Image (cartoon, rainbow, N blue to C red; front, side, top):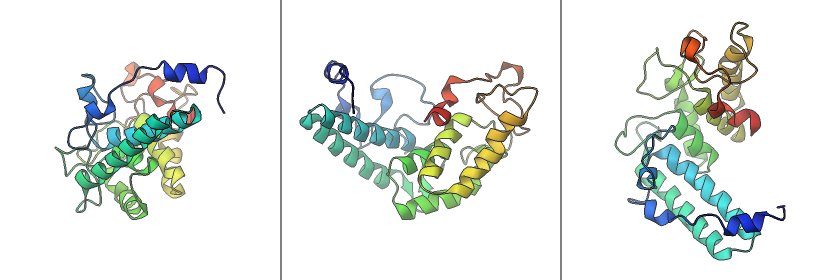
Length: 225
């Protein structure tokens, strides 16, 4: 279903050269704009798996408005990027996706989240990723394998993980996040706001103390999904 303005908005949307962002088969966001990428390396697993999701979603919209050429192109690019992720970023030794090509021994929450939710990971690799998450656990949530036990936990990235875990039927792991990370933001009478915080500390307090956003726009993905 789409409303009367959908087709007009679609055909007037800027036509970005997606193929121009691709180098070794992976999309590099910094070829398009020089920005800090919250999810990890600009050409890493999280960015590329999210791009697969985006391209496949765009293809569905293109089909609805009758743009079959674009739909076919985006499906083809998504399939190509999916292959590149599995060829270049999967680490058999880790049993996980590396966060980026330059850090093959580092894996993390964002990479796992989008590899699962995008369909990049097959059933075997999904299980391996979830099984290895114990190595990422820091207090109430998960981070990357190169952080220590003082790290602050992001409800934003863990929200993407929570969504991915529920999509793939890993309810025990999802329950851990709800019972620990989300409960920390709900049960703290001094700081609860009814919304997700920017970061949560290992002691279950706001991650940046009084400077922490207690109603953070980056972390509303899951409650509004």
